Every structure is written in structure tokens, then in C-alpha cells.
Amino acid sequence: MKNLTNKRILLGVSGSISAYKAPDIVRRLQDLGAEVRVILTTGGSKFITPLSLQSISKHKVYDNLWDSEAELAMGHIELAKWADLILIAPASANTIATIANGKATDLLSSIMLASDTIVMIAPAMNQQMYLSSAVQENLQALESRKITIITPDSGPQACGDNGPGRLPKSSNIANQVASQFQSTQLSGKNITITLGATLEAIDPVRYISNHSSGKMGMTLVDACIDMGAKVICIYGNINIPLNDRAINIQTLSANQMHDCVMENIVQQDIFIACAAVSDYHVKNSASQKIKKNGDNLILELIPNKDILSDVCKLEKKPLCIGFAAETQNTLKNAQNKLNNKACDVIILNDVSKTEIGFNSDQNQVVFISQNQQQKIAKNSKSKIAKKILKIFIKEFL
Image 1 (tube, rainbow, N blue to C red):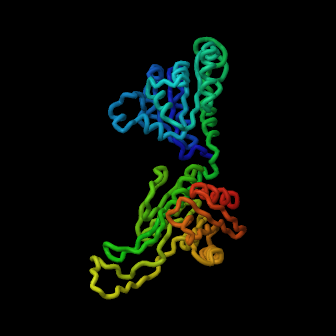
Image 2: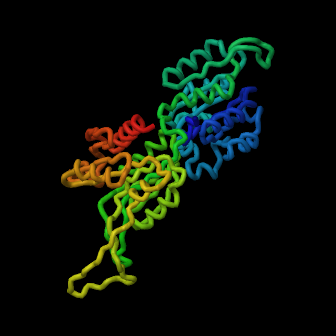
Image 3: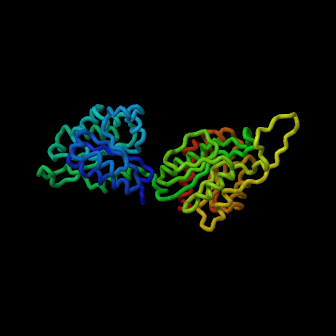
């Protein structure tokens, strides 16, 4: 199981002879599904070249705090924000001391001060250096800041000594990194999620739509990615940022969204239909703006293709989660939708309540399957998404 899927690991390589193991650490992290970028300190560059690390990571190796091109975009700040976890392996005595004392003498130590993400440090040095009171005090200081110290191995060292200070096996380090992420229940799963509102043209200026912001769907995208899934996000009209770890595909009308879903649904394990899809479109939308002339305007509406229903009819259908935005007879209507569309789960959302309806940051839903009805109490949409997935995983996976 690739339990680092979607995770971004920033690897700091400092001045230790064990730096020659860094490419293998990158490889082992990649084997677990991680995207890895590397910072190479001046000391680290004495033992391994940037080209070696670039060839393995497939990304530029960062080694200069004063890189004018990178700093035009505040490079060290952006790298700090990019990482889900910072791993320093090997960590030399000098690098440990610099970080423990809060200094910003190079790119790596500057990023450490600018980041609030998970940090792991793997010391690698001569056994006498490692056991010195100065190094041990610095390690204790780092641990007091919730930084995880990877215990070094003990054994023969390059200098001829024998004792603690050897960098652990790369696979061991990678597995310890993976253990920092608990949400791996969807690792290896392919999930397509629709979200946002569709737009049905009346003419080139006007359209029929609804109040959906896409917030609920995007929190599901975020939660699925955090749990290790590969996500295709098919979105309509939204006013929220996209998650750049998903494959994001924009559509406008309901029929465009339908076609996009059907083109991408093959080999998907789960389909979550969270978009607020228009049931009808204008039969003869005007090619030019309709001018007001005082007369009534009559629009003939015809049904759109039913995305959720058509996915559920597939011979090899994925597990399907639909949403029912209701204003009356909510439980009855949601149960009918579950049965009529032959999907696995319906999430009932009472949109008549403005505090949990469209555009709200909070929600309150009912998880409905053939086996259960479970109310999920009012909370942020982010927490609601996680609870939906937790119940779904327990019942179906």
C-alpha cells in the first residue's frame, strides 16, 4: 500500500558522509507514493552532487538561500508552505545545532523557521560526536518542540569507530515518515468527485443555475487526497480555490459535466456526485442576447442527462455516493433517490436551512444507505466530509 500517496516531502541533506544514501531515501519515499524535493546544504554538496539528487527526485535541487530567481517568488517561504513533512537525513551535528538555536544561516535552516509542518531529523555522525553533551542537549531541545528524532543505528562507522551514529536504512526512514500520516484509508483508490453549480445558457449573457458554491465538494476532494486517494475533480461554477493535487477539469453545463464524467469513470473505485446539477436546460437557447421588449418570455426546458443514474447503470460501476439537496419531505425524498438511482449512499442535505445550506461554511447531513441512516451533526464542512468518508469506509471498504 502506498501510504504516502499525495504527500509532499521536503528532504534536507546536510554535511555527513551518509549523504551518499540520500538518493536511496528519495527513491524509498517515492516507492511509498510521495513527491520529494531536496534541499542540499553546502556541507552536503561536499559528499553528493545536486545532479544526482535531481535525477532521482525529478525536481530542481535547492541549495541557495540567495537564489535571486527563486526569491522573486519568496522561494524559501513557498517551499515551507509546500511541504507536508520536512525530513533532514542525514542531519549533521552542525545542522542540528543551527536548527536547535533558531538560526537562519542557510536555505534549510530558514525554511525550518518558516514552516509549521511535521519535522523529522535523522542524525548521522561519528559516535563520539553523537554522544557528546552538546549534541544530546540540542536533540532534546528539538524534541521539546515536537520534532521527531529518528534514532541512529549503532555499528561500524566510516572513521573506524564503532557505536551509535549510523544513518538507518533508507526503507526504515521512509516507513517512519509514513507512520506520521494516519489517514491512509483510501491509499490506492481512484475517486472522481463532481462539485459546484452547472450553468444552462438562455443566451450568451444569461443562464439558469443555482446557489451551490462547491464548498462541500471541495472539502471531500481535500479529505480524499489527505487519505491517500488519487482524485479527479470535475467542477462547474465555483468560487473557491482548487486543490492542485487533484486532476481538475472544468465544465459548464450539466451535459458537459455528464460527458466529462463518463469519459473519466473507467477504472474509478468511487464516484461522489456532489455537484448541484441542473435538471433541465433551455431547448433553444438564443445565439444572441435576447432584448427586452415588454412581452413575456417563455422558455421551454427539457431534461438533462442524469449523471449519477448513468454511472450507477454501468456494468462495472464504482461505489457511488450521491447528494440530495432537499427542502421538504427530506428523508422520504432522499430514500427515493437512493432507490431510484441504485446508488450505494445518499447524503441528505436540508438546504432550506440557511445556516447549513448553499454557500455556508457549515453543514448538517444524514448518511443514508440500504443498511443505515446516520445523522451527522452540524459542523464545519471539512469535518462533515471526514465523517462521511469515515462512515462510508467502515461500511463499504
